[in-house]
Amino acid sequence: MLKVIGSVRSRAFRVLWMLEEIGMPYDHIVAGPRSPEALEVNPSGKVPVMVEDGTVITDSTAILTYLADKTGKLTFPAGTLERAKQDALTHFLLDEFDAALWMAARHTFVLPEEMRLPEIKTSLRWEFERSQSKLAERLHDGPFLMGDTMTIADIIATHCGNWAQNAKFPVTAPAFIDYLDRMRARPAFVKTRGD
Image 1: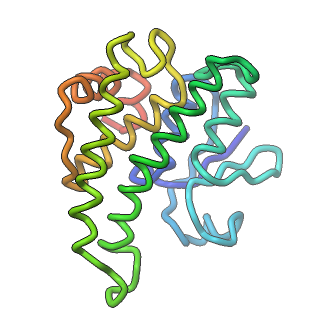
Image 2: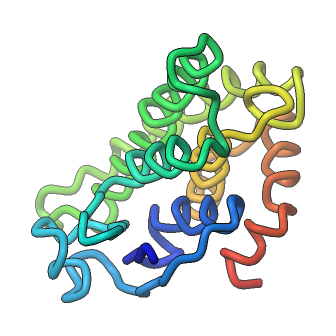
């Protein structure tokens, strides 16, 4: 059985939610970054970490992609145009959403205090809101980002939407707000969150 190390308050939420969506059994080790449990398998101490058959996989998107390809769920098949569109969307989310949120977090509590630049958050919020409007334009074709099919891009987008709201980033596009409400209502999401 595979093991996931990380907290639901981290990007490990993405992995745990996917595992619930696809119905794959797993062991969850609740641990934070640089915890003994994380450092034991990942020298950087970053979470999430997934261990399967003694092999360590790091980075939430790499884990999601592996699980999707392994099970054929929450993804389009590799080598298809749909998969190329899915991958492009995933990279857009990582570049435009996740990167802005992570940079803001770094300048809030990750970096040493003397290295933090609080004023950078103004431009990051602006970028996030601008990118959110671009993403909202995609939501007219179906309940999910790829139309009628839920993919790993939906997991990343929803996680980033939640992260943004917790970090007081503007979540203003009505289509994106409706989308987040639909995704948060999914039973697997609710179970992962622990409601």
